Image (tube, rainbow, N blue to C red):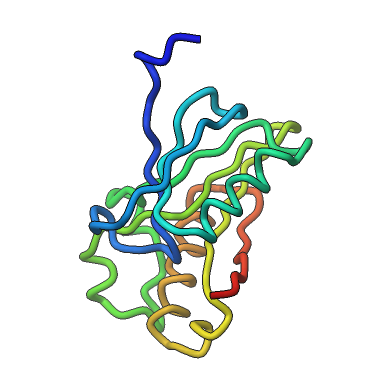
Length: 142
Protein backbone atom coordinates (compact mmCIF):
# COMPACT_ATOMS: atom_id res chain seq x y z
CA UNK A 1 0.00 0.00 0.00
CA UNK A 2 1.34 3.43 -0.98
CA UNK A 3 0.57 5.83 1.90
CA UNK A 4 1.80 8.82 -0.13
CA UNK A 5 -1.25 8.58 -2.38
CA UNK A 6 -3.88 8.30 0.37
CA UNK A 7 -6.90 10.54 0.03
CA UNK A 8 -8.58 12.26 2.96
CA UNK A 9 -12.36 12.20 3.43
CA UNK A 10 -13.88 14.84 5.72
CA UNK A 11 -16.97 14.21 7.79
CA UNK A 12 -19.36 16.66 9.37
CA UNK A 13 -22.23 15.76 11.68
CA UNK A 14 -26.02 16.20 11.48
CA UNK A 15 -25.75 17.66 8.00
CA UNK A 16 -23.61 20.64 8.94
CA UNK A 17 -22.79 23.54 6.71
CA UNK A 18 -19.93 22.64 4.41
CA UNK A 19 -16.52 24.02 5.38
CA UNK A 20 -17.13 24.39 9.13
CA UNK A 21 -13.98 24.29 11.25
CA UNK A 22 -13.86 21.26 13.53
CA UNK A 23 -11.41 18.96 15.30
CA UNK A 24 -10.10 16.14 13.10
CA UNK A 25 -10.05 12.46 14.01
CA UNK A 26 -8.24 10.29 11.44
CA UNK A 27 -8.05 6.56 10.89
CA UNK A 28 -7.35 4.16 8.04
CA UNK A 29 -10.45 2.69 6.38
CA UNK A 30 -10.00 -0.81 4.96
CA UNK A 31 -13.33 -0.55 3.09
CA UNK A 32 -12.16 2.60 1.30
CA UNK A 33 -8.41 1.88 1.28
CA UNK A 34 -7.66 5.40 2.47
CA UNK A 35 -7.47 7.66 5.50
CA UNK A 36 -10.85 8.88 6.77
CA UNK A 37 -11.03 12.21 8.57
CA UNK A 38 -14.06 12.76 10.78
CA UNK A 39 -14.95 15.42 13.32
CA UNK A 40 -16.77 13.73 16.17
CA UNK A 41 -16.57 10.72 18.41
CA UNK A 42 -19.99 9.47 17.29
CA UNK A 43 -19.06 9.81 13.59
CA UNK A 44 -15.89 7.83 14.28
CA UNK A 45 -17.91 5.14 16.02
CA UNK A 46 -20.39 4.94 13.14
CA UNK A 47 -17.58 4.78 10.56
CA UNK A 48 -16.01 1.92 12.51
CA UNK A 49 -19.42 0.22 12.59
CA UNK A 50 -19.64 0.52 8.78
CA UNK A 51 -16.16 -0.98 8.48
CA UNK A 52 -17.42 -4.17 10.17
CA UNK A 53 -20.62 -4.62 8.16
CA UNK A 54 -20.58 -7.25 5.38
CA UNK A 55 -23.38 -5.41 3.52
CA UNK A 56 -21.20 -2.27 3.10
CA UNK A 57 -18.93 -2.23 0.05
CA UNK A 58 -17.63 1.30 0.67
CA UNK A 59 -18.70 4.66 2.03
CA UNK A 60 -18.00 8.35 1.64
CA UNK A 61 -18.12 10.95 4.35
CA UNK A 62 -19.03 14.61 4.17
CA UNK A 63 -20.66 14.47 0.77
CA UNK A 64 -21.56 17.97 -0.38
CA UNK A 65 -25.09 18.59 -1.58
CA UNK A 66 -24.73 19.94 -5.12
CA UNK A 67 -26.50 23.29 -5.69
CA UNK A 68 -27.72 22.23 -9.16
CA UNK A 69 -30.02 19.64 -7.61
CA UNK A 70 -31.41 21.99 -4.93
CA UNK A 71 -33.75 23.62 -7.46
CA UNK A 72 -35.59 20.29 -7.71
CA UNK A 73 -36.12 19.99 -3.92
CA UNK A 74 -39.52 21.07 -2.60
CA UNK A 75 -39.10 24.13 -0.33
CA UNK A 76 -42.33 23.51 1.64
CA UNK A 77 -41.69 23.95 5.40
CA UNK A 78 -37.93 24.45 4.94
CA UNK A 79 -36.35 27.87 5.52
CA UNK A 80 -35.36 29.55 2.25
CA UNK A 81 -31.99 30.43 3.82
CA UNK A 82 -31.13 26.71 3.87
CA UNK A 83 -31.34 26.57 0.08
CA UNK A 84 -28.72 29.33 -0.17
CA UNK A 85 -26.22 27.57 2.13
CA UNK A 86 -23.79 24.77 1.31
CA UNK A 87 -24.49 21.52 3.17
CA UNK A 88 -22.77 18.18 3.52
CA UNK A 89 -24.35 14.83 4.33
CA UNK A 90 -22.71 12.59 6.92
CA UNK A 91 -22.39 9.25 5.09
CA UNK A 92 -23.10 8.04 1.57
CA UNK A 93 -22.94 4.24 1.55
CA UNK A 94 -22.51 1.85 -1.37
CA UNK A 95 -23.99 -1.53 -0.48
CA UNK A 96 -22.57 -4.80 -1.81
CA UNK A 97 -25.75 -5.33 -3.87
CA UNK A 98 -25.13 -2.06 -5.77
CA UNK A 99 -27.71 0.07 -3.98
CA UNK A 100 -26.79 3.37 -2.32
CA UNK A 101 -27.89 4.74 1.03
CA UNK A 102 -27.48 7.88 3.10
CA UNK A 103 -27.05 8.16 6.86
CA UNK A 104 -27.40 11.42 8.77
CA UNK A 105 -26.17 11.41 12.38
CA UNK A 106 -28.14 13.38 14.95
CA UNK A 107 -28.32 13.57 18.75
CA UNK A 108 -31.62 12.28 20.13
CA UNK A 109 -32.35 15.50 21.98
CA UNK A 110 -31.77 17.57 18.82
CA UNK A 111 -34.82 15.99 17.17
CA UNK A 112 -36.95 18.43 19.17
CA UNK A 113 -35.27 21.40 17.44
CA UNK A 114 -37.07 22.67 14.35
CA UNK A 115 -33.82 23.72 12.65
CA UNK A 116 -32.41 20.18 12.89
CA UNK A 117 -35.63 18.62 11.63
CA UNK A 118 -35.66 21.04 8.67
CA UNK A 119 -32.06 20.15 7.79
CA UNK A 120 -32.83 16.44 7.95
CA UNK A 121 -35.88 16.95 5.73
CA UNK A 122 -33.78 18.96 3.28
CA UNK A 123 -31.31 16.08 3.15
CA UNK A 124 -34.08 13.50 2.68
CA UNK A 125 -35.69 15.45 -0.16
CA UNK A 126 -32.33 16.16 -1.82
CA UNK A 127 -31.32 12.50 -1.86
CA UNK A 128 -34.81 11.49 -3.08
CA UNK A 129 -34.20 13.75 -6.10
CA UNK A 130 -30.83 12.01 -6.57
CA UNK A 131 -32.57 8.57 -6.56
CA UNK A 132 -30.81 7.21 -3.49
CA UNK A 133 -32.29 3.84 -2.54
CA UNK A 134 -32.28 4.28 1.24
CA UNK A 135 -32.14 7.33 3.53
CA UNK A 136 -32.00 6.99 7.33
CA UNK A 137 -31.25 8.97 10.47
CA UNK A 138 -28.83 7.45 12.98
CA UNK A 139 -29.54 8.56 16.55
CA UNK A 140 -26.44 9.07 18.65
CA UNK A 141 -25.95 9.64 22.37
CA UNK A 142 -23.99 12.63 23.59
